[in-house]
Every structure is written in structure tokens, then in C-alpha cells.
Image 1 (cartoon, rainbow, N blue to C red):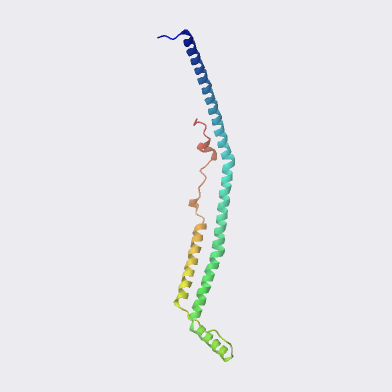
Image 2 (cartoon, one colour; image 1 turned 90 degrees about the vertical axis):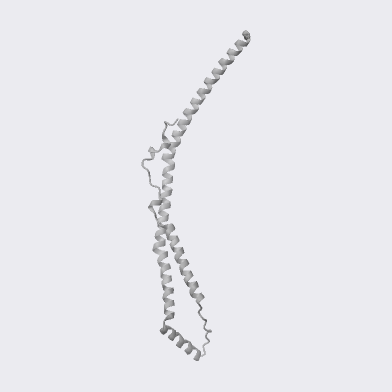
Length: 175
């Protein structure tokens, strides 16, 4: 069964319109591809010239702050803590000395003879020394954790991989 001339003309006109529409769409896609390629190139340049230096500055400032904090902790805090612990241990050792106990006993008896009221002697149980030991261990643990946190490990920092322009971000051959 053959098509009528009218239907044949309508079919030919529809084919021409479809081919023209297809050509227009192909041109629009090619234009969009060119715009996308240019936008990608511009974004790559912007990232290389503007964003990367800012990130590098931020990492440099953070590293400098961490180094300063570590130096302050190692130079100021740890010596103060160790000095305090050493003083406390020296006082405990001095309290165990029989000569010091004898002096304290004499002063206490002299105060009683003079009419000075003294407080009753508290017995030092093992709990006091256990708590003191736990406090020292806790202080040492906190100091060690802070030191581990703030120390500068060069292996933890990401190093510059070379020329920023050599990154794959800016290659225009991908499209």
C-alpha cells in the first residue's frame, strides 16, 4: 500500500524538520561542551592561583601555632609540673626523716606547756599516699598526652608535590 502524495510530502517535511532539529541540537551540545571546557580551565586557574596559596598559608599558620604550643608546653609547663612533683616528693621524704619528726614533737610539747592549743594529731592512713600516687600518675599521663598531641611530626604533614601547574586539574585534553 503506497502513501498518497500529500502524506509523502508531510513525511518528507517531517524528516527535514527532524534533521534540522538534530543539527541544531548537535550545535547546542558542541557550544555547551566548549563553554564547559573553558569553565573548567578557568576554575583550574582560579584554584591554582587563589585557593591553593590560601590553603598553604592556613597550613603554615596552623603548623606554626602547633609548634609554638609545643615549645610552650615543653619549655614552661612540663618543667613547672616536674618541679612541683619533685617538691611534693621532697616534702614527703622530709616528713619521714626522724630528725624532722623530733623537731615537730619538741615544738608541739613546748606549745602545750605554753598553753597554746594544738589540734589533735591526724593519723595518716595508706589512702592518702595512694591518692597522692594516683594524682602524680594522672598528672604525668595528662602531660604525656599533651606532649604527644602537640609534638611536631614531619611525617604527618603533606608535602608539596612540585609545580602547582602540573596537576591534572588543569588538563584540557579530557573533553
